[in-house]
Length: 98
Image 1 (cartoon, one colour):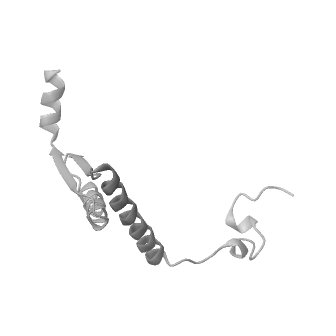
Image 2 (cartoon, rainbow, N blue to C red; image 1 turned 60 degrees about the horizontal axis):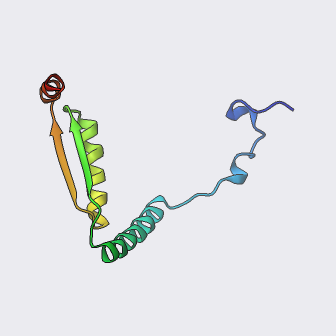
């Protein structure tokens, strides 16, 4: 028997038999809750908190939204955040300064 190459090559129902429907929001909330606990324990032991730093280059709305979502998630687990912007002219100036 040949190896299936597309979904239509599989026998009917073969793919569904191994699938499990999950509640993505519940799983996500559980992961974030556990991460918050781990971070709190780490801070107690080390005396230092992790920090999420994002450096945005240029002005891309999709990148802005992606970073914004990461910042919200980090704050929800108790991690401080910093966001820096570097624009194309700054980057070129720094490149030439080297």
